[in-house]
Length: 206
Ligand SMILES: N[C@@H](CCC(=O)N[C@@H](CS)C(=O)NCC(=O)O)C(=O)O
Image (cartoon, rainbow, N blue to C red; front, side, top):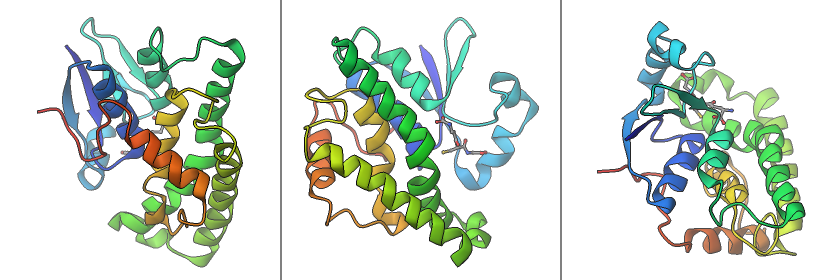
């Protein structure tokens, strides 16, 4: 069985738990929570597994490792309906997954994390939170512009891009972002949550 090192409260980790649950892939879960997590992820033993010292991380049965949430999503999505067959739609899935890491996570998720985690209290200054709000709103507006046109980010079908962007968008209000005024995103969040075998962020394998 594969092992997933993941942070229960983290969206990047949730992406992986969600796709594994949706695909019915069993896994052993090793939880790394944020406040105590730094010591675990910064240990030499963990850094041998993942030199970036971050979760999520997959450990395969043969002792190989795979890190970066979106790379893990694509690994498990390959050959499933979560990767569009159409070449352009597939490229659009990647487009949104790169967008997630470049524009969305660094603003929407970072602002929520700064407000949520105790050891980030020193990052709650107007100089830091202001630009994060501005950039996060821009990222959400980009998503909204797409989601008023198509049911899913890459087009007509639910794909790995929807999993990647659902993770931090569904909890964006924790970062002070307004979702109610964005009807495309609001309807899409419900559509994603209604997918077969969808699990919430809190879900962990028993
Ligand atoms: N780009 C990476 C980011 C991973 C990341 O930042 N993980 C955070 C949780 S969201 C982490 O491991 N934090 C714990 C630590 O730094 O010790 C991905 O998408 O997997």
